[in-house]
Length: 111
Image (cartoon, rainbow, N blue to C red; front, side, top):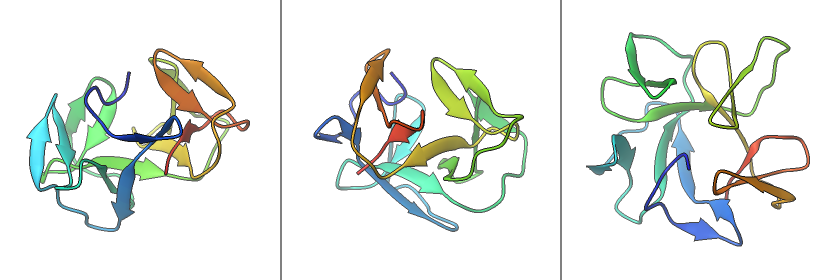
């Protein structure tokens, strides 16, 4: 599971995504908002901080994108850009893998 202890809505991982997003708290190596949503930074990936194959900001947010590319890879069943950003989509869950909900497009489902 990408984010053990995260909050979910209808199987979709709750996230707060914005450019330069800074987490309020930390748990399981990931930054979280005070409402329990995963803190996602939508800026272009940079830096050298990694957590389990996912690129992190210096502030502790995970990088995320809605864009896909033929060079994307899968880590723990999660689509990740070659730069290390999780690929997510605000859409209904159509399948599960490793406890994560995925959309019909193969992206991690978010709320």
